[in-house]
Amino acid sequence: MSCPREVDVGAYLLDALEPDERMGMAAHLRGCPVCSGALGELGGLPPLLAAVRPGDVHAEAPVPSEVSFQRLRRSAVPLRPARLRHRRLLAGAVAAVVVVGGGIGAGVVLTSGPAEPATMQGSAGELHAWATVAAEGNGSSISLTTEGLPRGTTCWLVAVGRDGERHRTRSWTTGREGELSWTGTIALAPEQLARLELVGGDGRTLVTLPG
Image 1 (tube, helix red, strand yellow):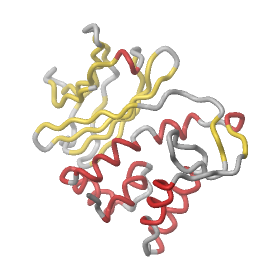
Image 2: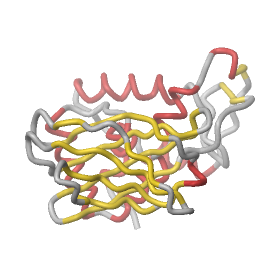
Image 3: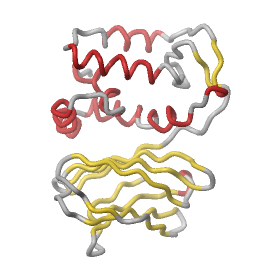
């Protein structure tokens, strides 16, 4: 099974789409198993890009796999000028990492780095949430994206460990409606995390993201 919009998943993940395109892609992801699956596979890319330092890479002739070549070939579709500019920015960012297990290295190879981040997602009615969890020190960094939270909603995340231990993040209030992003840290390491709970100002759990 394939989807012609699968080529936009990476740009969506790295915020390289125009606002109207991003809103359309967010709606598409909720009903497309192909693209939502690709989003899960690529969910660890932003934290991995952020973790790359100049000393972590060295030049090496890339040897792309057949699967990677076919994916690249399928992505060679005509683009509007604005989208082409964003795709070039996206390509420059992705060139800084290699996807372990058969990705395209684009001339660089990581000599060391953190474990691949985990992706979590959950829905409750019109509210949808996606989170990328990456190791940071003795805990984790979390990049959360939500869609469907009303403007003025106060909320926070509760990280629940596999032993039942609960860690709450600082709270925040949505300044607008639509798709929103939040980034923070928790004291639990990724392998200790059982689930994330997005909690409203009244203490009610709005949506759960299982690990």
